[in-house]
Image (cartoon, rainbow, N blue to C red; front, side, top):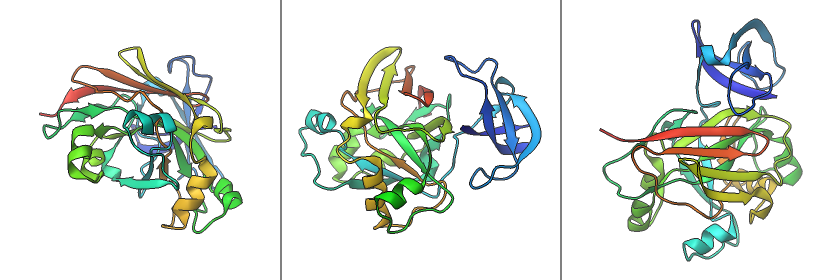
Length: 262
């Protein structure tokens, strides 16, 4: 099932996207869910064509927890060691935008880069001090993410909060896919239709259950929280006028234009 969050004439709702996407949204409908999507789903009976509503980021979590250097080839391209345990950092919820929203380049940085990533969405029970089995049970679904990073600020600051925390630096979408086996799916990033990143999740240093378990022993993961699982090699700068597209096999495509912040 594909779960979306959208704005319609009556307000904001979650919904289930119906139909089979074929490189676009034509012919897709979204069926309104009564309330939130965690637990048993109840539908209101209302539905809209996807092209007639505004699609938002599929979730607005209490926190976004990210994993650094989780692909050996990405660590190598930055001449950095592969971590011996998951390297975690946070992005604020205010950095989240949705599909087709604009990534806004801040004046403080001269080198903003894309990072295509598989994102995990935590389910209804959350996760606190869980083992691998509990971690698997805590997964609600998956979506695509772009861990946009001001690389020059990441180097100069010595820690990553500012470099990764600007407004618009966490595109998510286009929807959450439930029931997906994400252990070996393709992660791709294109800038202006040129492939910049191409990897597979089987090459992650730490797999999804390991990551969830590790984080849950540090902080409680709440329903709707998002985990970004790391990026493969090929990160590169994005500039005003670019279109940056992240595609995750089995999920779909997250596309964002790049603009200079006024």
